[in-house]
Image (tube, rainbow, N blue to C red):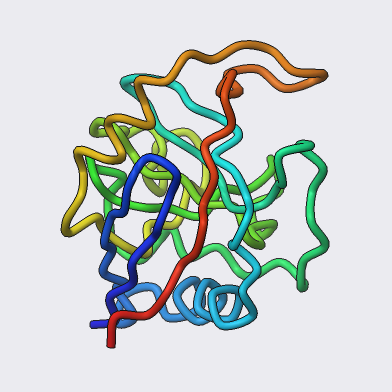
Length: 163
């Protein structure tokens, strides 16, 4: 298993990628990590009791250019449980690129076959869930066309491999 540290302005948390059950999602995520893509992005959507989402926008909430979307691996048997990390996507099933979210609770309705194809879990928080919970507790509001945006930006300073 591959482990990474996600350094944020609220502290660091460590994640373990499940390269066996979500190989495409993990390969995609690591490609962006190795390119330094996530450095300086923000958690742009924070909903207490649900999830924190980031990895695709800067403080200005403009989307950063990405590679082509990947195939959705939500049918890999992994569940959207508290502390798991899944690829964010649009209504189109195979549209995930860089954005990801950390589940703050068990979100079975996001699993494969729940309401649609589902959201592909590819990793889990293995240390620092208190940091994730601190991010989930920030004050949010509306900015432009976006709801649930932290009033004070929460940055991803870096994502680095531990091994």
